[in-house]
Length: 108
Image 1 (cartoon, rainbow, N blue to C red):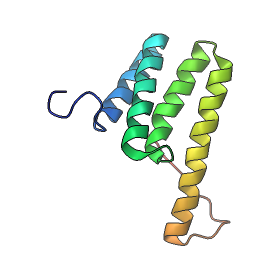
Image 2: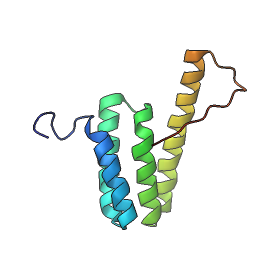
Image 3: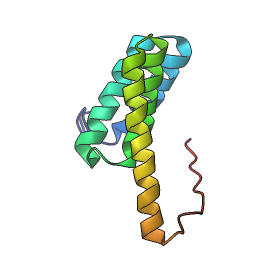
Image 4: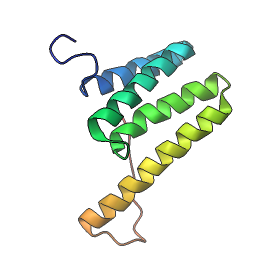
């Protein structure tokens, strides 16, 4: 943390993975906190319309759902879906793909 600081974009993948582990262990509030932090960092580093937000937003939505906060979960998933649709449109423009060609996204 001393090298880049505790809000550096390189922390995104670590925070996402820790959030996923917390979800699997049933530590839902921790998963929510790690995901929220990852979302904040991604928004500051890349802006609010970047694909980097999809993973932390989906983990946040999953934590909210598991906590029974369905209204919040719904809003987070809407946000994540918006980012995916935006990414698809940008890819179509950048690579001149026809509108009828399906795009497949794989997250790891």
